[in-house]
Image 1 (cartoon, rainbow, N blue to C red):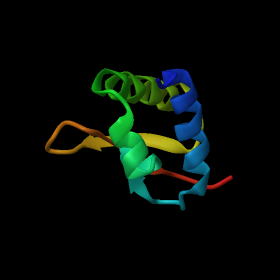
Image 2: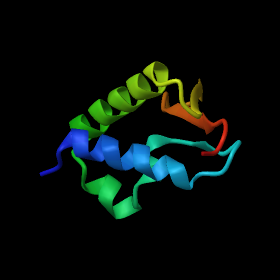
Image 3: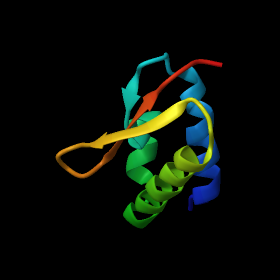
Length: 80
């Protein structure tokens, strides 16, 4: 079973590996097999928590447009 808060921390940590200007989805921060093993309800919650983190933190990530399948896209704005 996955702890969504631990997954959120893992996703936030993984954004440090992105380069400035890179556009990504939350699912792309995880290996495909790991993402597929996370229950759907937990993936939805993780997406909400990640968006809240981006909106509240004055960091280097911005929420941009959504995909045609209603998935939130993000952009790395600057590097550490």
